Image 1 (cartoon, rainbow, N blue to C red):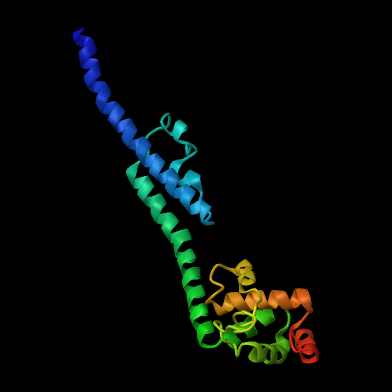
Image 2 (cartoon, rainbow, N blue to C red):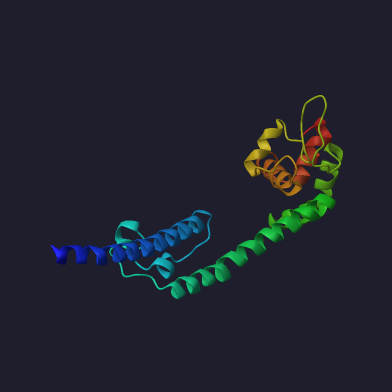
Length: 196
C-alpha cells in the first residue's frame, strides 16, 4: 500500500511533463496547419517530426524546446518574410495604380501580349470612365474603370473590386479578351455601336 502511494506521487509529474510536451506539439502542429492553409509551404516534419498527429504525439519522445525555437525561427525567416514582402509589393502596386491606373494597365497589357494596344485601351476607358475606379454611370449603374454592368461582375477578379484599380483592370481585360479578342477590337466595336 505504501508502495502504491509512492508510485502515484511519481506518476503525476510524468503525466504533467508528457501533457506539457503534447501541448507544445499541438501548438506547433496548429501553427503549421495554419501556415499551410494560407498557402505557405512549411515542412511539418521540421517542427513536429513525423508525429504531427496529436494522437501519435502523445506516444512520441518529447520535443526539445531549443529545437522548436530554431524550427520556428527557420519558418519565419524562410516563409513568412517572403510572404510579407509579396504583400508589401502588392500594396505598393495598388497605391501606384490609384495615382495612375494607366501605368498598371500598361504592365497588365504587356503580360497578355497586348503591349502595342495601349492607345486603343486608353481611348476606350478614357471615354467610359476617365480611368476613375469609382466612376458610376448614373443611368445604367455601370461601375469602375471598365464600366462593368452589373458592377458585381468584377467580384470574380477580387474582393476589392470596388476600389482597387488593378482588380478592375484585370477584370476589364478578361472581359475584352472574351468578348472582342483585344482592346483595339473592343474600341472599334464601340466606335461603331456607341458601347462595348
